[in-house]
Image (cartoon, rainbow, N blue to C red):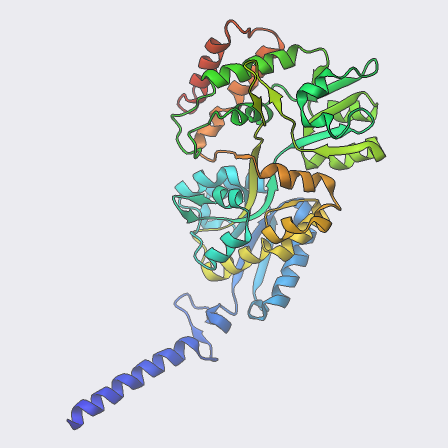
Length: 424
């Protein structure tokens, strides 16, 4: 009996010692040779961070705030390099072992990054991250039910218009915009007709899908169904309308500056220039409805993507990198991005702050637009989408597409979209 009691005392003593070692104030060496401090984080973590050239100064301020808000990170070394979100996938996949521990990337890159094993599955504060973010931003960061990115900003397009030419009621419908007779030499409406980013919104609004409802099936695209044919007919009429012009960014900016344009589709990147041109007549609104030939009223669903922060799956500092990535995408940092870069937030609290958002009308409208947007597919098959859609738009402009051959042309377009990568 005495031996059993002694054994029990020894076991309890070992358990207590183990618990003290895990949660005590003293530092203990990890297997990687780092030292663990507060909350189990390494006190001497070395983290590489990638961000765009334009964000460098802002990121320096964010890191300073991060260390102030997280004393456990006071002695961390956080080295920054210039790699933009649009280039992140290419640079990471060159060699993940030397890539940044934390990097910003566009959501349409997530499937390839995850498939290559380059993204760390988010485990820390996952439920809170989801709760803090708008639903479609979380969808863009999720694969097979697992979260692989921290939503930071939203990106899509909406409509700019000249308030001296259209009322708030008139800009709700593209039909009413086109029906109005404006002064000589003024274009009622313009868009980049041979650009799939814009054209796809009409198909999505009519219920068509690209790569299935979840955007993950490379064998599915129904832009050539009955509704798709009606959308194609609408685009054909749009391209032939004398009140419509095919404008890319430079042309639409020049037209607004010269007072020769009533309304157009674009994103927040053009807000400053258009505001300077229109002054008090600067107007922004969500994209207008269209009416198809069968009488169906469609609200186009703009394609949207998001900038996410990701953690490299090969990082030596997973917990520390997650803490930093979560911080860089939190409410405080998203507010700073909004104020410094005019970026549209994904944080639900900021999106409820109308007083804040209304200081940037373009961002306020974009935040509304994104609520009904369709997430840009992230699978590699998306690379086969842009060129066929561009060709379709160009053929509509050139009248190589007719209502008689519309189904045939859409069948051909869809075949190209679904062809094996590299083949058209």
